[in-house]
Image 1: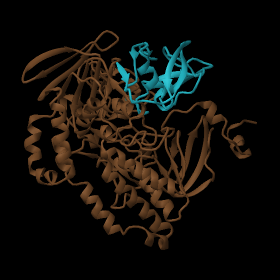
Image 2: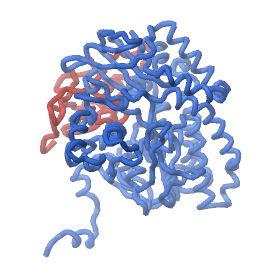
Image 3: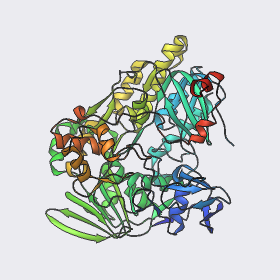
Image 4: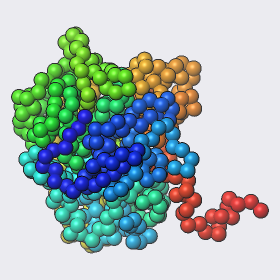
Length: 98
Length: 472
C-alpha cells in the first residue's frame, strides 16, 4: 500500500510484529512502520470484529489501536518505534492484564 | 526518558505545537513570561509542519516552501525560554485553569494564569459507504506518512474529495515518486457560482497562483474526474474498488488505497470540555468557539488560537498565536508588551493572512450527500452505528446527540465523537427539521483522551482525598 522513498536515509530499527522481525526506520511511528511493512496489520474492532487499519494517523480516530510491549489500546500513530519493540496486532477489545 | 513539567505554576500554558502554538509560546516566552508548551506529537509542527525537525524528505522543493516556514517558527521557539514537552497528552482543562497532562503513562498537574489552546483542526468526517474498510484513509493520514517517514502510495491509489490540501497532497505524492491513479473531485458545480462574488480577494491572495500551478502540475500527470456526486468504497475486509457517479454516469475502478478529504474542522474537544462556548458556523459547517478579537473565549483566562478558533489556515494560525500571546502579555506583564509587535500590526497581518478564505470556504463547502449519510453507511466508527440506526433512534424519541448516546453509544467510543460528532448533529438536525445549533453537540468532559484507571490511581493523594472516598 505504501513504499519508502529512496531518499530516506534514516537508520533502521528492528521491531517485532506478532513475533516476526520487521525493519522500521528511526522516527517512524508504530502505525507508519506497520503500514510500510507489507504485512497484514489489520486489527479487529471490539464491537463487531470488523477489520481496520489506521485512518487518520494524527491521534483522533483510534483505528490504529495496537498492543505495544504488552500494553493494549495504544495509539500506534502517536508512539515512535524503538529497537526490539514488541507489537501485537490487537484482535477485539483490550484484554485484562494488557 | 519521561519529562514532567519543571514547575507547578506557569504564567502561560500553550497546548499544541502547530503553527499557532509555536508562535504563541515563543512570543510569550520572549516577553519574559514563564511558558510551558505541551504537545501530543513526537516533535513540533502540528499537522501542517509535521516532522519539521526530523523529516527524511530532504529535497526542499518536494514539500514546498510553505512547509519549511515551520523551521523558522521552531527556531524562534528554541531560542526562547519556553519549556516544551512532547508526547504530552492534555486530558483535562477546567475553568480554574488547572491542567492535567499524561506524559509517558503518568499524569502531572499544572496551573496556568493564562491558557492558549492551539489544538488545531482535524479532517472533516467523510462518511461514505465503506469508509471504515482497511485501505481507506484520510488524505491527511497519507500526508503525515509522507512528511514524517517519506512513505508514498504504491498500489492503485485514488484521492477523492475537495479542497486545497487534496491538491497539495497529490503534488507531493507525485514529486516523491508515489503512485496516483485518479482524483475524484467532489466540488459541487454550484459552488463555483456561489464563490464568484468572493473571487477578487482570492485572486489577489497568495493562495491563487500557488493553487493554480499545483493543480496544473497534478492534472498533467493524473486523470482528474470532476463533478463527482456519489462515492462508495467496497471490498471484503479490505478495499478492492471505488465506485462513483460523475455527470450521471457510474464507474467502478479497482483500488488498493482511497484517500478521502473534504476540508478540516476545529478540534473542539478540549475547549468544549473546559466549558468554552461554541456556535454552529453555517459557512464552515462546524462548531467554532465564540472569541473576541484577541482570541479570548467565554472562559476567563482561556484563549484559542489557530484553526481551533475557526479554520483560517497556517499563516492565519501563526498570527492568531501571536495575537493571543500578546494579549496574555498585556494582561500579565504590560510593561513587557512594548517589546512585541503592536496589536494593530498583528491585526493587519491577520487580515492579510485571511484574505481569500471566504472564497475557499464557499467553493469547497462539502455537498450534503457527503456530510449526511443514509442507510447502512457507518456514522460512528468506534461503536459501528449506521445512519439508519441514528434515524431509527430519532423515530422513537432521541432528540439530540446526548440522548442518542443512551440509544446507540454514538460518541462514547475511544475517539469521543471526533469522527462522528458533526455527522450526528447534521443528521439529527435534518431528521428533526431543526438547525444544527438547536440540535447541539455531545457534552464533552475530561478526560478528553482515554487514560487508564491505573494512571489515575497512581496520582499522589492527600489525606483529605482518601477520606473523601474511603468509608469508616
